[in-house]
Length: 464
Image 1 (cartoon, rainbow, N blue to C red):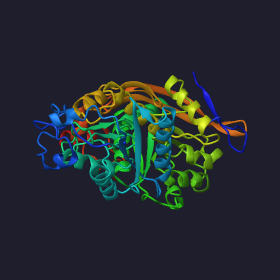
Image 2: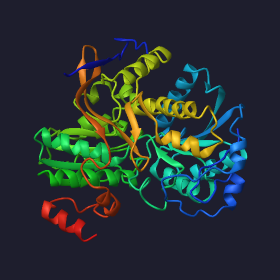
Image 3: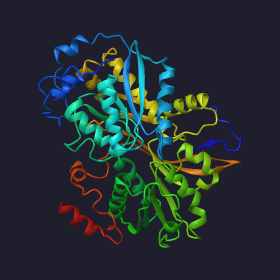
Image 4: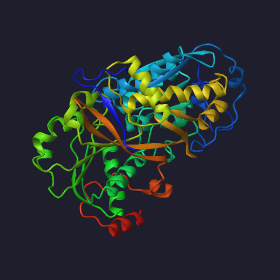
């Protein structure tokens, strides 16, 4: 059943809307501090189970002081809206539990990485080595996630929870990054984009245009959508890769191929806002159905400005305000009560969910985050109905969850969200095997998708 969740624009509807570190390594014993971890050899970093905790870590398990959690997000720059929403979502959850979990005060230490990997790594080192963060969370940009994951694997050996996007495919499978310390609670690009391609095919679309920001995540989105769409019987008729941070989309939109019946997009942050704001002006009479990957164009902060210009966009994401899931609806109610009139995004839901995941794991170990092995095992076993809906981890410690397809529709004097479909218990291997994901030549197909046949694609992948 389709359902409309109203968004009150123009006053039409007011929406009643961190102690010391230790680790859980794969060496013979787990270093009891970052300093000890830095001296330990990073052997077996790609394993999936932490070794037994060292006696020193056990001794700290009864600590009742504050738990400091480092949260690295882009709080300034073009992706600041995503970072701010995630920050506020986490703060909302913590306030709901009076900043106390398992009898211990939680102190979030927020750090701005400016959407830059080198800054993220510098901030992570500061948080762990100098401010004694017991774990790291956040990470919006995929490059930031990769940079810190490698440092955590090789040197820091502290729990790292990806809770703000960072959906790069190799994060939990590539030996350069994976480790027992790393879990991801956001999404992979394959989870969302394979669903986007499947849904587009089910609507009868067969000629797709690619329109994504020209950086790693954007190009990966294009690769995933194109490969699934082609294998399902569709074809790619155009590829466009505007630079990240483009302000004028006119030259790109004016060149849209008139054969396009569906336009696959990934334009995060302010890029999505500018694209949608200029779409009607520059796209001419031919306006193919837009599919907004990750729902970044119609995220709350953008939608508040776009209003009716967003009507007709179909979004595919891990969260929708229109979802009937009890966990999602409870979060929507809490957000609206705390933030009247402020629109929602998956970033806000992800921030709230990060607190729920942390709480579930800490409750299992009585707040003893310093005893790394039990804490990490508790993380691996978390299965909850969260702000995003049901979430749990797969064998690679990556997220399993529902993916929603929803439209932006006109609703009275405002606009609203209408749920179109829900794909349940989605993993990154829903469409393609783990072997293909590991071997797929990510970012090598850029500029080669137009006109590619199923046979050509199969031959290209077989040669890898």
